[in-house]
Amino acid sequence: MTLKPEHPGVVATVGGTTPATVVAPRTDEPIRGGVILLQDARGITPYLVSVCARLADAGWLTVAPHLYHRDGIIEVDPAGSWSSAPQQMGTLTAAGITTDVDAGLAHLADAGFGLERTAVIGFCMGGTAALFTATRHAVGAAVSFYGGGVNTPYWDGVPPLVELAPALRAPWLGLYGEEDVLISVDEINALRAAAGTAAAPTELISYPGAGHAFHSDDRAEIHRPAAAEDAWNRTLAWLHTHVASA
Image (cartoon, rainbow, N blue to C red; front, top):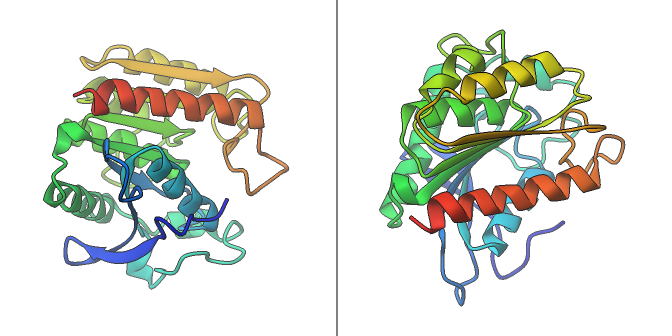
């Protein structure tokens, strides 16, 4: 999917230091709220920019911080990025993620969307960071697509998700594949149980026959259209219920 000319992606600097892809709904449509969109381990790929466009089509002002910018990677479409993704992901820090996400939140606040009118959505490592964010801020909602680090943390300063989940301050939706070679079914079930103890509403949906990155329609070998469509529809419904209706 390519960006529609009515709302092209703009690489801006938010919070004074963080490069981010910003995509707004068309000017003739009302804005439902703001979304911080957090990248998968590959970076700011055309796929991730297309997700920004889909959110804009649904009425959401979307900010996708370029989390690898401290390593000089700020471009859209890092070619062949999957092979280097695990090593690159390891360069992130809790402090850097916090700074970049909070810069995006400040940008949305300046646009008129406070925390209750803002959602955080992430894919892969971005799903991990989305849950982490929802323990730090009472955002309107959070959604994690196959966020890892469930039992073993990815980064110093970000505890495993099973330890973080009980502290969720925002409604959280988890979307996982039961054939994920990186996240076991036991981990999925443990995360579901941990999130269920939070004060905020939570739901974790797992899809039989779907693996890691099942939503990534730029990778035909792992994309699972039925699971991806259902997960996306649930995401939009979650945002509508907890953010747009706030």
